[in-house]
Length: 194
Image (tube, rainbow, N blue to C red; front, side, top):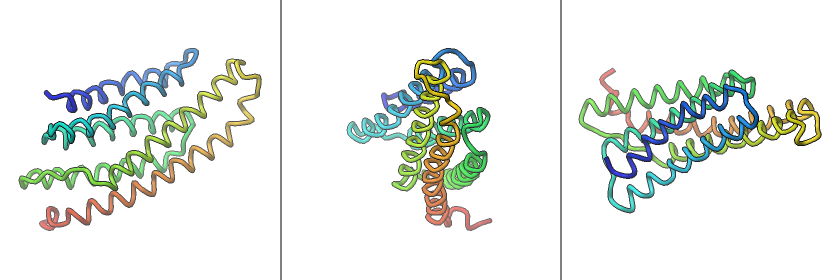
């Protein structure tokens, strides 16, 4: 297994640790979960650059890299809904888009074609990761207030942070919808039998 693929697998392996850090309350757990998410996000940037620079692009990487992104982002969004940091509508939209695109990719693969990620899918992933990181930062600020490290009432910020988080998520939601429609339109020849 080459280095880019190892980084992709590492990103997947980091997800359970991020989930545990988010859902098991301990001092600075949001910071720990956010750092794990950040490290995983950096592997996303590195694996593609290394693969292209060293000509290490593989069929496994073309499938696993976007899958790892989906696992990382969707796990975060589901945890955010569980914790009350996000509305459930966007994660449902993201799941719908990911299942649709993955289904198209599987149909294409069954016909001997690999559908690689395009710029719209990458923009979708980047905006999702920025939104998730933004929510981690805001929630960590709230955690610092709860721990009395910052002498402010966290309730003051909860509504503001929720709204800002929703705006960030819906910006990524626009890219999610656009990229999903583009994938399906570009791959309509693979699903024309249906």
